[in-house]
Length: 363
Image (cartoon, rainbow, N blue to C red; front, side, top):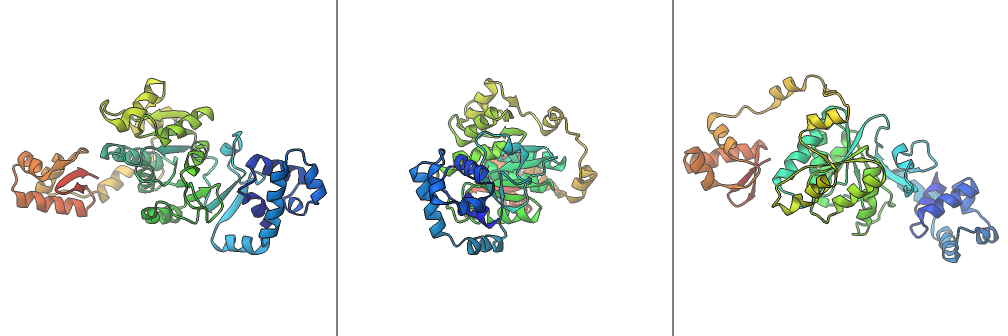
């Protein structure tokens, strides 16, 4: 496998040519030891490609590099491996190899991509989390990109639903980007999911990596859910990849005056499925609504916080759009001290969050 790593990590050699070279030579080790005269006769390689291969042989201490890869808990899966995801294998522009921390998605389980805006609204956050949680409760795997905003909420929702979720990175799998998602990154692995990338370990996040990684997010999925997106956004690139790959695309409708819903509303106008509720989506996916983890209704009753009267009044007044403390005082007819005290309890318990000074939304 060490020579497979050498071939896969050659960033200057296109994936298609890696595949042709590996197929022609029958193994990556044979490709490494190919005679220069034979290398020069291969019609699918140009002079620049040959130079890249020769240079890679000089620069790499193959056994040492592969040992370092394994020590970091990273494994390599190439298109020639039986473990390579079948959904990806069907694509014309499939990655030659995937670097994996944790697991790959289960081939026998339904997979859904959850994507959307990084700078999303509380509305988008809520429904990304709600849909992902409910789908995960029913055994659906959630695929996303670990980005801020919708991606992160999709992963979190899946974990809340006790399901598996997988992050496709636009950098090496040994780098958590964004850094503030390091806890989420670790939780994904701890809960049986995986961190995946076609880029070699150590590759830093670069803007041009992310559009191409989106084809892997959609390629690993049966369905693409766009939760919130501008008319021009990376999420729509994922949706386009999904359509090209024959995936069904659904979008969350939003207010017509919200720029962050423009892309979703446009997708719906063009024929995308409409996300009205997780239950309706499960019906369309022909997935049973019976939860894989037992009677979740009873479980929720046991774990949800029972709100005290004043807290209940305050919580009922907080919504997905920001409200000021003064608004809440006026609506609940409670004193400022009572409202602020209730908000403090609700925030500690994770029911609400302060998004700016004295302005709150539901979590």
